[in-house]
Length: 599
Image (cartoon, rainbow, N blue to C red; front, side):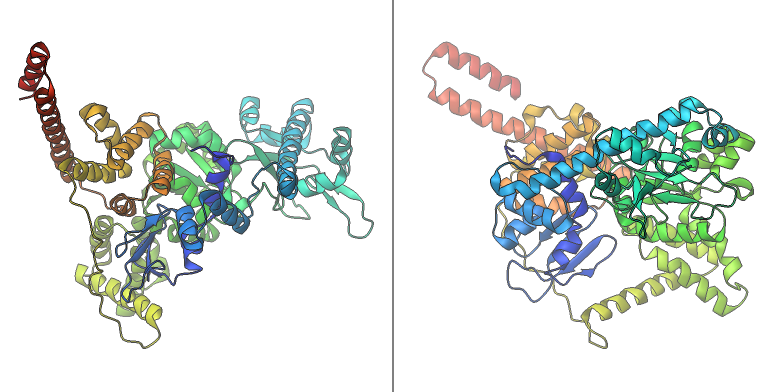
């Protein structure tokens, strides 16, 4: 699409604007399981909710009127604006600066320049801190890394550094580079004393960790105190800036991204040193939240790269609470979650130093699923020998089980939970049903009667060719499984795909999978839908249901066969028409031979 706004700005806006939050500001939505929400359609009059929002895929679809799309399309439809104006409205909502030119956009241009200046400052100080570490082998930071067994090449790889133990070293260095004190203050490199107004270094005397954004730019720092009993916090971070939003950053993601895709797994650690320990052990798919709490935005970033996350949090009380909070965020996003247990209650960094890289790597292979972790913790909290204690234990498990959106996975865990807790599966089903009814009552009003829910009025649909129906079915399978998309490149010649939007989008998904960028498929399809709305395609994008391996093979076989047969039928019709209109006998014979080969 020919536009002046860069693609990376559009993607940043998409990631920052939660579609449920945007649509929920004008439509009353209720959770319908997992990342799915339902409400009354804002585009046509209806009494029964047929408007559905899939938070995981960032897509909405109305089964009544057929409208659907991404968050940009919603704003276009709702506000009656074109795509560029929808981008500007959402950018203003989430605080993204769109670089523009012209007298009317001086303010935007200034804000864009400000962001670029912050990138420059952070990059310059990342280099400065790295040099301080290399050139001062006896400095506290260098001695600390040596005591941790972290060699120089690892320090270089992760851009570790040392902030000089002086009150104004960064102030003086920044001035020498031509940066104003106010710019250094905004970047979080320095602070200002409230009484005197003097500027002083924020990370004075600390070990620094450069923090990258998703594209690999340094946007800020985390800094560890090297004192045995620091008077201030053990770790300090860059304050929130236009480029540093800690809830949207994952430490070491640019280094881990390829490994996460290849291994189909992300290891989520508590901090930077644990992340480094996993990388040194060969587990290069490890990342960590930036800050103390794991956020939904960070979870959504991981979901773009993988369907499985292993949690490597500490064994202490705080670590166990962090696991629980992470499960409440990850499970609704339909992510498979495992829990890594470090022997002896150590953290990964300690285990690496005491037992070596193989021991750290083995913890990932041995990680159990989240239900095992939950059930193992129950005896310490509840008296399972009493009916009340066992009931409370069931409530604890069900509170997490209800968050699993995939019905097959939920059933698997339900059966496992029943076996572990020594209760019937029907009892857990009943508890799940009770919680679901309570949520519906809360949505419909306290004490209100649950309304009957007749099926929504179907969209008037065109009768599609067998090829289009098969393409739409394969599109759903390929979006869910990049491996299937790659197989389709061998089973389906491109010329057999239709010229309709279903064929174009299926070819697009296959191409993204072959290029190792399956996460790019959805945004590009949404771009096509903005130009050419298609209710049936929109419906496919809403659905995340997965086939079993046996069903997937059958669907694959049936759909490829249907596409091939429809392609041959269309080719026969085309050749017959060409033969009838051809007057040259030699050409007629040539076309007849081709028709015979098709037959």
